[in-house]
Image (cartoon, rainbow, N blue to C red; front, side, top):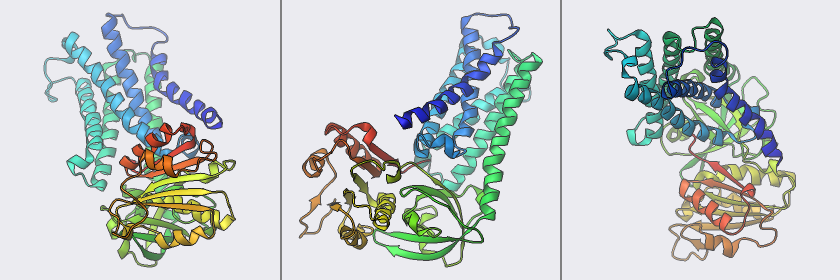
Length: 442
């Protein structure tokens, strides 16, 4: 209930930001009405524009605003809201095209067409490109860095073109006060963009971290240990949180990646990130040298035992490198002497891929840790669980004592997330007790 009550004000602020421009434009003297569908198309245009503007705020990583939801949820909301906003803007265009095509001019040639109509078409194309290249980045084989640059370009140019279109057409905005409202809103988004793309990177540049150690782990993973250089570093973080790291690049160049912190907060100011070599910049972790600069933006995330101090125990269901936030939790519990039970289902392809295998065995003697390994390709003499995590496996092995009161942490590839959530809810675990960390933020 506390989390819901803290989230409601931010939902209200979002709705206000989306609807306020339309409400302001409807105040005062109104232009002569044409008919319902024309006015409805205008309303869709203003609403879509406001939704696109709010997109900049959703990815600005304001901790207070993201805390009730988790930043992974905010990013998914950002992704799918962009699709909704695009369809709203597209509906604005289609209604005019079908019912009032004379309003679109005689030609789409930008050399001859009115500039304000050209700006509207350019905005629609830019927004469409931003959505398409994000939704199908893997299929289009867009390298992460190239996608980040293009995404910022499409979104920024699209927003600027949309503002120019609205002011140029002048429908509902001819009154000085209403034009001032749109100019003020535009200035706000420009300042927000400067905060995200200039102020925050400058702060990171002034507070670098240095590589202290690079340690090979099982499962083609590497632990990158960082220490602050010339500053105190993070004051605190919750075990299970993550940060964006900029590796071998300037923080101004949009080359950051999100990684979970695998070390406990009790070891601050030193931070460790265990990263699987999957591609992009992650494949170069093994080549980092002691003393190299790394830039950090964090911590973020709500996937942590510290948010559930009154729970009687925990269950983790993780796959592959999804173990990293849970390792931060387990290490922190060991440092604190926290003896609450923790049952961990850990799925991997084979026995050699089990990252932190030896340390997990050691933690068994320091914690009330019930460790269940699940191997897709087990060795011939394997006596443990094999295949995939299923509802039947969870029903057979989950402790029945206080099952509905335990806090559940699920992290890993999408098939594991879906199987774990479906299995737990089928066994009667309340959704509020299930915390999911979503891998793919972009």
